[in-house]
Length: 215
Image (tube, rainbow, N blue to C red; front, side):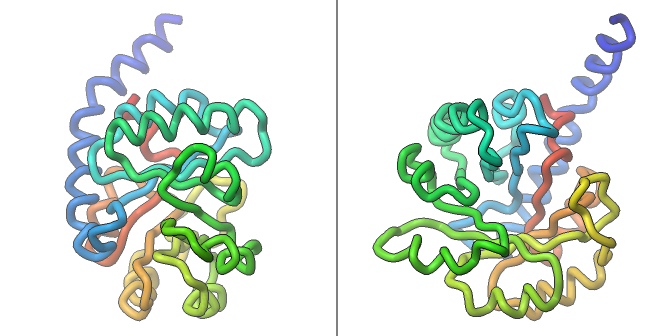
């Protein structure tokens, strides 16, 4: 117990410096992502992150939230609270792969896995919602050019412990892809407070675990 308390105290001690780095990176990235999108995104994952609302409450300005519930009932219920928290903080929030929940919660828009990209046009029809899309290869990125989305999350950029992570492309390949993409590109995979500012020179950044030390 003492070790656990000590570890938490150590994280809290470094949290302001970590938040400052993410804030600076988000501010820099926003010049590339545009006025309607944040410089960074925090992606929720009910199987990997426990106290999501605590993390969101500690996020610096310029970081949006993408809620992914993966069909888990508790996570779906919590989505309503998360959207409410984000609205109070004037923080952009998207719902992944669930248009009905996005409408019910009043979220700002939708995030789509690449496999569901065919649903984007239908979902967007008649709705003023922000849409983002996950892509995992140069081939998927080329196909995303024809999707009516506002931005893409591109993975895997750095080495990541995520079960779904592929081989890391590295900063240089991401930079080239971002320079050639007609849509803003967010780096996903292995993002930390130490490398977010280097990514922000070329695009936005997104992560599941990078923001945990803020709470």
